Image 1 (spheres, rainbow, N blue to C red):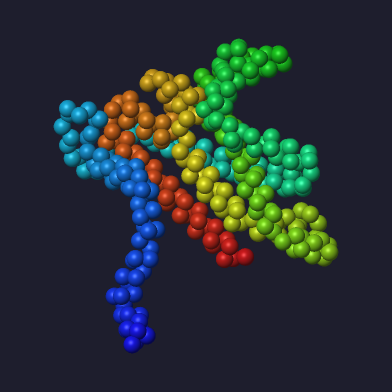
Image 2: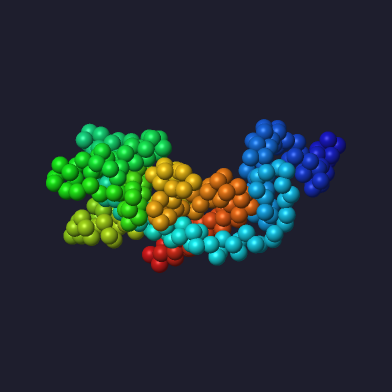
Length: 316
């Protein structure tokens, strides 16, 4: 009789559903604190920012908030400074991600052997990645000072050259940003690519070497194609991080209301312009609209890169 009752309960979908709920209820209970924090500090601010992007909110409680629809988005799309920030970040992303990936590949291939010297060298290249970005940017700012007391100008003067106004000339801003980013990021890229190299079966290279393929041909026909998933990850994450450039641009350009973005906005980035609109001009609605435009640009570009990566893998 008991077996028949159990069989009828097992055959009843409602009973099975209730048993699953009672089984996983403690797990859901343990997840509840995290879900609450995630909703309060992530989900709700996202929905709130969408709402603010459709208003003229200024952050002043006494001021009336008016619904303006998509006027903030239209204002940004016709804003010359916003166009300048997009052009600056596009160049920064392209050169930073490209050069950083190439340098990371070279370092990983050269230093992949498990020698003591290689281990020390890998550690030295990786150290900037775990160093405070704010601290290193302040140091680099003094290196590229525009007066004769900057380290670069001291070296140039010792070679008989004239003082160069690095931070006072627009054409030097983007090369300085790219250089500092590669200096601080190539070590992390090297680590990812080293992990990808370790996952490649060494027998493939050994078989190709037996067939007469030299090291250069083995790299292009075996190593590089098998590194495509790792390289795709490095490129996508590097692109997302590069689009969020703020602290370096803020520190090097001075951070003041008049100097923000450097001379002729040569160092102006979308996040720096967002900070200027939201916390200097107190136009929170316009700043929120800029954040969502930047979010859409990053999403679209990431999907394109993922699509290209998937297409290249399918053609192998």
